[in-house]
Amino acid sequence: MRRHPDPARPRLTRDVIVLGVIAFFVMVGFGVVVPVLPVFVRSFGVGYVEIGAVISAFALMRFVFSPFCGRLIDWAGERVILSAGIGIVAVSSALVGLAQTYPQVLVLRGAGGIGSAMFSVSAMTLLLGSTAPGARGRSVGFYQGGFLIGGMAGPALGGLLATISLTAPFFFYAGTLAIAGIIGILLLKPRSHAPQAAAEAVAPVPFRQVLRDARFQAACLTNFAQGWTSLGVRSALIPVLVVEVLHDPAAWTGIAFACAAVAQTLALGPAGTFVDTVGRKPAIIGACALAAAMIVAVPFAPNIIVLVVVLCVYGVAAAFLGTAPAASVGDAAGARGGRPVAAFSMASDFGAIIGPLVAGWLVEVASYPVAFGVAALFLLGAGAFAFRMPGARQARTSPA
Image 1 (cartoon, helix red, strand yellow):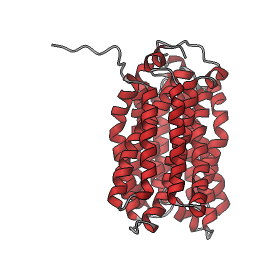
Image 2: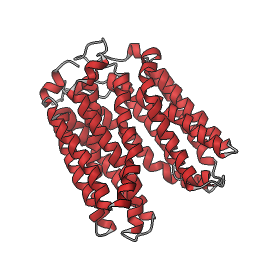
Image 3: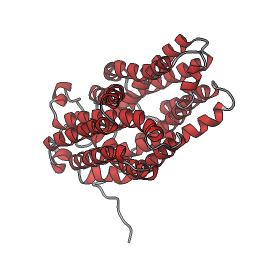
């Protein structure tokens, strides 16, 4: 007997699939550059502080420029800003490969951060705006899957390209970004043709109204906690912990992170389905609790095998934390939410900027368990706030 499509589970739109492909090409190139960048900067004869400044410049400019992205999207549309942002990162990356001095590298990486903010905010705005509420979780999961798969492939390619020269990865990055930009221009639909979610009004929801929505507030708090924990504390402290506490080779850090990325990628599909069917609220609450438990357990891992298992379980929680909050932003902001998406993105960037600094200070004045414990408190706080969100049925049917 022929099965008919379930009307309650709309299919992923073409724009979602295209954005997932774009995310893959962007992240492959980014992953190629990441392991080479510190070595390349060091070749200019500068110290470790200067190396850190180059890495921070990208994140800082992302954070500073994000508030302007919403207005740019309102003016020119998501597709144009997305492609322009990718173009800025592509050109700045190619110029980094041609740089002759350290200040040139610093300025160009900062410019790349501006382009990255334009791309990420416009891509998420388009993703949420072109997707029906019942498919937002799966759509975000598919999009993030492109990032994760690209991120796993990139570092390996970067190591191979580095054997050619330290500048080759930057030109490769520019090439993958050019491909992503061309795909965006040719295949993404203009905003006027993007399908509006049937349950939402065409008129944009006022930003002040979005700010008062418990769904948006919980999403931003969760994104801040996740930025602090995953992009900040996890990335900054675990590599040191592996070497100095577990006394294992540094290569094991890459293996552990790769295993966690695989676990997160495999969990994205079930996470998206759960978020769309069971609800955003239980997904955020449960994932925050699980992630907090795992991050607290990290400094107590007796060996590298246990640490890998802990990070893999954390990766599963991260799959839910990557899909449910973004879907909640779409529920609160509606189909044209450039400014809310920018604020949501800034929450994660802010956590990623200050998280490593505070965590490093806590390790120096206290201990690893304290540093990881503070990260867990932020996750638990975000999960507790999520109890203020409406229930699953109300969240999906109430007007944005």
